[in-house]
Length: 33
Picture 1: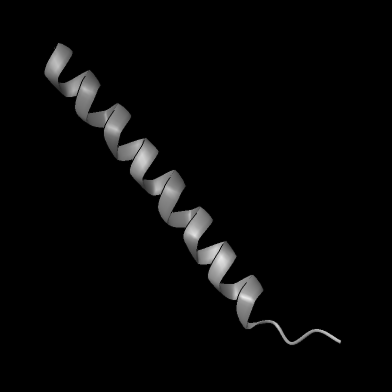
Picture 2 (picture 1 turned 120 degrees about the vertical axis):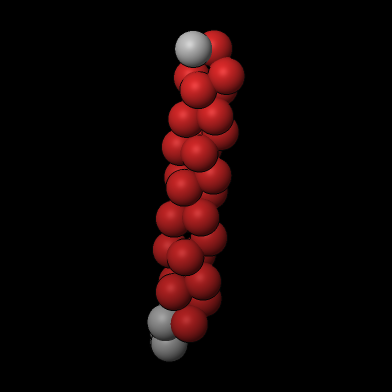
């Protein structure tokens, strides 16, 4: 259905953003010279 397709699209987008935030956070925590 259209509703299910829309929900899966939102979910995939949310997971993508969540993964990006985790990568960004770990990059900030990494000690650099």
